[in-house]
Length: 363
Image (cartoon, rainbow, N blue to C red):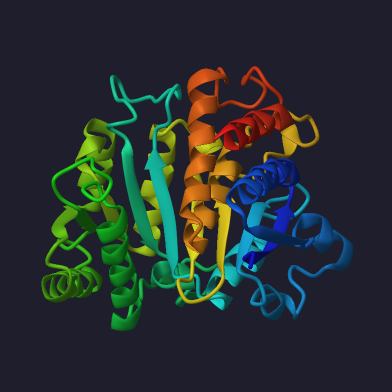
């Protein structure tokens, strides 16, 4: 019997629809080749809906999305909507409501893609950042008092409990065991590095570090453990990215270092990410924004969206199909397109998608 996956599609704003369409093409090609089915349903959450109705998300949104196996997102951000309204009202709301407590960000340099790091190759830039996605400073714990006066006070606290930290770390250990460099035949150890700031943020990262070593020593003795300060991590991401295998860190630090990682892998046009609930519904997206100035021009780079589609299939368990999509992306970057930048690829958005599909179907 054919397995059918129900996918909620949120094209969102700007060029989101264009890149999502190319991701759909890759998904359909992979499903046809590997013998499963996809049932994709569109939702109009985004700036246009907000401007039309005044509603960011309908009351039924979370319940509606919980009925699906995964969510495929285009981009959120509208030039006529104040920054923060859509991002917090859609992205953060869904992450928290659907308990997508892991943000998964591969940092991989694909063949033929330029990196600003001198002499670095795809073998050097090939690691993953696992960011805790439900706690920390992004939950908004705090407030402002005496606003607008000379004595104004603003407080926003980094808050973590043991449960949040442990479940993130366990996911990271499991991921490292399954997908670390040794597991992929690229090293002699699967190594998980905790990124923190134990010398300054002594309370929060004392909790993270103790849990990291207790869990690792007891349940994952086969996974090598290392600790890195976040500022040193940023330096080594630039100087020696080949040192890294899998990194796990807090919400804020993860947000910062993944943007740095995206730039080293060639920019936002090739960077994809997943907001993961291992026991529920996960959401996958290109890291770049909605790029409204390119909307409707058919020149935006769709490869990040196609990579997000591959991540979605991998998480759903369709690993062969996911690998076929990623192989298609590698073939296109290595043999076809000239640049990751919009309008400079040498092909249109839809043509790049067609090239990936062509390679998927060829096998």
